[in-house]
Length: 429
Ligand SMILES: C[S@@+](CC[C@H](N)C(=O)[O-])C[C@H]1O[C@@H](n2cnc3c(N)ncnc32)[C@H](O)[C@@H]1O
Image 1: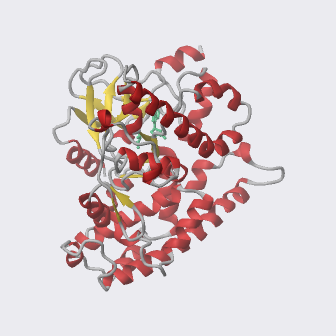
Image 2: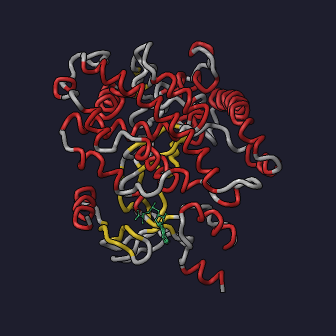
């Protein structure tokens, strides 16, 4: 197993200036193979799976495959303001060429992409079995159920779909599930449930049962959708790209049965995939093009541009407030303290969650030497925060580090380890 893991990481790392090894007491880890100065990029990676948070979709329209924010500035503005494109404040001619514009196309189900290439890439990795384009597919019920209960189920579905499609293509299930096996450890309930959440008289087993019941329901809906969609795929429909060779290369016969027999399509596996996200996923943020544009013209002397920006900013800020008020309310008193900051929050970033094979292999330190930055195409770049020497372990911060040692330990408890970084050791003395 250790040799398979090392070979898997070697394959992923290729020529990047990092190496994989076990770190004592921490499990898998990444190390630098050369020195880096602060600010220097160390490596970059696209996510294994990623999704934009459902609530954020009302404000930002992004490519489902690469997470670039799609459309022209006017289309992006129309999306955030919830109006027709013709109703947005017309972009002054003098800044039109500086406004980043991406293409936009859609699948029959309504999923949006920046290009036909991205639409095909998503279709060929997982979307072909998850698509809700067919009006009768039970996946409609699965999606609604996930939205109503836990949107992470949508990401877990993406993982299972990726494994099923990869197996349908290559008939190699061990290779298809390996990226996930590298992370899967505990079922969802063992990751999220903690004794302090128990009600009086409730046992841990009773509490686990609540999660188990929800997950069994979720998995049943997922399987209904999967059986329906793969049956329709076997008949070669529906399909967004007629010219794609992809369908012809798929062998669907027995794929679902094989995956069930191997335990990949099982409620237990689904539970460890959801547990995996709780412990390993990382938030994904992509800056809005309107925000870049506003920064570019911040100190402009052009009165027309200044008036356009002021108008747009007022309207966008009102929408952002409207769509984020519900979640703010839940935070109660913290709300007031955040109000001053709200004044600066204007253009909504793309906000999502992702799993990266390399980025998510890095361990935590409360004195991290690297941080993750997102480019406008969803690519994550790991950047040095401090001077890094050859052989140093690359460590990110999983939590907000501007808190005292007890608060940090509390936030880290969900990752099931006690931090022994030099700062925690110092602070505990
Ligand atoms: C995102 S994974 C990182 C990869 C992990 N080492 C592995 O083997 O899969 C997070 C897990 O790594 C371990 N971990 C991360 N940082 C650690 C640290 N500073 N000390 C001990 N264990 C750590 C914990 O088990 C944690 O739940």
